[in-house]
Amino acid sequence: MIDARRGVLYPARMPEFRRIRPPQGAVDLVEWFWIPEWDIERGRSSRQHVVAYPALNLVVGPEAVELTGATTRAGFRDLTGRGWAVGALLRPAAVCALVGNPSALVDTSETVDAPELQDAVTRAMRGEERHAGAVAAVSAWLVRRVGPLTPVAVQANEMADLLMTDATILRAEDAAARLRMSLRTLQRMTHRHVGLPPAAMIRRRRLQEAAQRIRDDPGADLARIAAELGYADHSHLTNDFRAVLGVSPRAYRADQRPADR
Image (tube, rainbow, N blue to C red; front, top):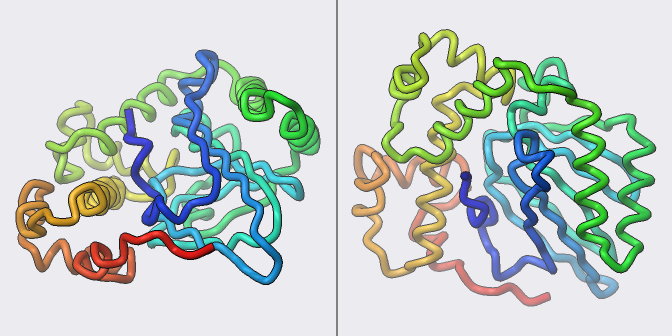
């Protein structure tokens, strides 16, 4: 299973935030649900930085339902006022029922016309068991929308699990061999179900793990982290950090402190 701790670059700065595993009926469609809630005093904001998973998210909020695509770089969102969101990190098997071309959503999002879903989640978030109710509402909607999984959808889930959890997979060719398919077939599958090439998914996994190791052990040797994650050298890791996160590993390590709210 994908490590749910990764992706948030500054966990200490997060508002109230929950990750919830999907119910049994939706485990093939959702990796996990994420539910932030915030109440920021007037005139202030809270900036949340993420290096997102190479996957699509279905996000339900008080104003709209959105489908957000995979990303190629770290991003942020400024939270103000009072609010909430209910997000589902989608597994590849759910994607084809929601969008025809995931690559067109890379680094962007589109509104989903699903007023019944928004109404159900909004009602749930007003109740006493708001998180469980919201997760149940999104899960039921996705199960109805996707329907029975095809063999290709099941294989797409296996592909993503391999690329995002197996540290021995350092190249797309490694993944293709493990999945017993051609490299071209693997590339078509990631394009159709994620919108990114397999090499980009592997790169994101390694970068997320590097960031997590730095957070968990600020005194860790950066050259050792680079070597253990398959980077050619420390400079390779540093270049990857700067290209995606916009900072060097050393600067990121120095900035692991809670922000004032």
